[in-house]
Amino acid sequence: MGLRKIVDNLKPAFSEGGKFGFLASTFDAFETFLFVPNTTTSKGAHIRDCNDMKRTMIVVVAALLPALLFGFYNTGYQHFLSLGVAPEFWPSLWFGFLKVLPLIVVSYVVGLAIEFGFAQVRGHEVNEGFLVTGLLIPMIMPVDIPLWMVAVATAFSVVFGKEVFGGTGMNVFNPALLARAFVFFAYTPFISGAEVWIAGLGSGEGVVDGFSGATPLEHMAVDGTLGYSALDAFLGFIPGCIGETSTVAILLGAAVLLFTGIASWRTMVSVFVGGLAMGYLFQWTGVTAYPAWWHLIVGGFAFGAVFMATDPVTSAQTDTGKYIVGFMTGALAVLIRVVNPAYPEGMMLSILFMNALAPLVDYYVVEANIRRRNKRVKLAK
Image (cartoon, rainbow, N blue to C red):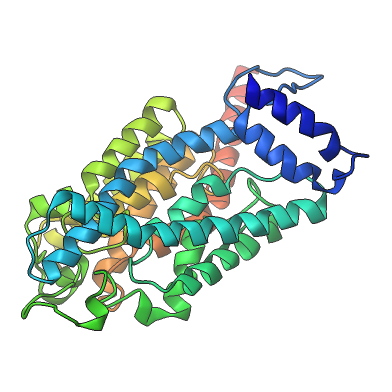
C-alpha cells in the first residue's frame, strides 16, 4: 500500500536515534491513527483484537455524528426562524456547518496541541481520549460562544481534567463536562439566558418581534410549560446546545454504542429510570404539574445519559455500581432542575458529582461481595 510505504520510509527518522527522534511520540500518534499497531503483549494472558483504543474512540465519534449533523441543521433552522424566514434544509445545514465548524477546529487544535506537548515532555505515547473529547466540547456549548472562550475552556479541561491526573484513563472527572462547567462558572452570561442559543440573536439585528430563544428548560422553570410542542422537543427543533437538542439523533448514537458494546446499557438505562423516578415523585407530591418524561427529552439529559454518564473511565466499574451511579445521576439531575430554578440544567453537575462518588460506590459494592462470600465460606465449613 502506497501510504504504508511512505510511513515506513519516514519512520527511521522519527525513531529513537533518528534525526527527528524527539518527535517519536508524535509520529507514533499519526501512525497508529492510520494503521492498527502491529505490537502485541509478550507475556501473560491476553486477547488479540484489531480494535485498539483509537478504533474504539472512532466508533464513539461515529455515534456522535447523527447529533452533530442535526446540530448543524438546527443551528441554521433556529437562525432563520428568528429572522422570520422560512427555514430551508440546505441553507440551514450550510449555515450551521459554517457556525459550528470553527468551534470544532478550535477545540481540536488547542486540545491536541496540549496533549502532544505533554506527550513530548513526558516521552510517552499520545493519549487517544481527545478524539472524542474534542468533539464533545463544542457539542455541549451554545452556538454563539466566543472562540477564545472555547479555547480557554478546552485548555482547562485537558490540563486540569486529564493531564494532572496522568492522562487518559486516569482522570476522575469527565473532561468535556469540566470545559462546560468552567464556562458556566467563569463566563455565566455566555451560557445562560435566551440569547446565547440562537446564532446572531445576541445582536438583535433583524429578529422578528415576539421571537424568543428561551429553551424548554427555561420555560419549565419559569411557567411549567415546554414552550414548544413535545414532538418538536423530541425531534430537536428547539433552542439549546449544538448537539443536545435532538433526542432521536442521540438515541441513534446510543444504538451504535450499545450494539458495539462500547457503552454500558446498565448505566444508560439506569440514568433514564432515575430521572423518571424523581420526576414522577415531584409530580406525585404536587411540586411540578408537567409530565415527568419531559425531563428526558429536553436539555442535556439524553445526551448526558448516552455519551457522558457511560464514560468508562469516570463511571462505575462494577455492574451493581453502574445501576446505582446511573440511577443517582438521573435522579440528581431532575432534583437540581426542579429545586434550583436559577439553574434549570442539572445534568452537568449531576454527572460531575457522581464522577466523584463512583469509586466510593464501587468500593462498597466490592466490600459487600466480599462479606457475602465470607459468609458462604463459613456456612460451608
